Length: 336
Image: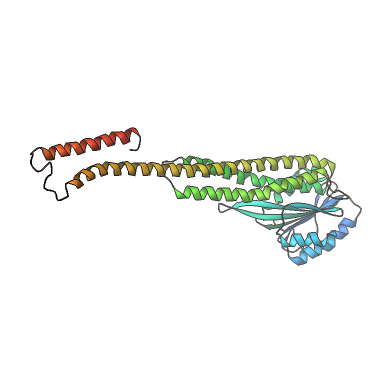
């Protein structure tokens, strides 16, 4: 998590900074935001919060003139990915993801974008946006494009955090594909296939709606006074392309997982069929001598083996010949 700025800001305020017209950073107390924005000087404010209290959100609502409905959405943190316009301010909700102890954990980031400010509110499993700020500060010419460029940096970082998760699941799928065709059936393989498909389904619910959000930002039809500068739209198009590739990769893996589950079921059915055939063949081999010998367990006086001395050896040879013939027949049919 980021380190809070050395000001009197609450602990949930991870960052409250003013970037002047040259892209130079100046730490700013939260209660001076409205005064700074009222000044006729170039620059913009970038505020970052992590699971803020209601009091902090209400203070920022007053300082930045935010719409109460948008603030309520940011407080609840159970929003679908979307972009909405409230006058000259945009409200965005995106889902974040990260790997924690081998499991995907999801969070949300809500962003308020105005002509001279960017406010990000993180909830749940959401990595710090310090790398995005550091990138913008290294490239001061980008900061001169205003808060919409800072929003691009945040969205780009969110999308970049999807990539290692997708890559890890792709590697897991390759391992499972090899295990599917092993000679022994393992229930754990089916469980892992199901868990992997479930994770990718949830992942798609987070990634897919972001395509529509970025498309709206690129078109510039989301606000009366659009805070997205034209120079930034080409950067948003790049993020859109990344999301599109990730979404396609997720869809491809989900299709492959569905096929893998079907193949696994087919292989299990075939293996069971082979087992049933082998059992049936051995049962037939045992049935032949059982049938013959069962005749001689009945109480009849006139039976062919009672008088001749060679009757029993002949009977054994006949039974052995029948069993051998059945064995060759089943072997040729690949039942044994």
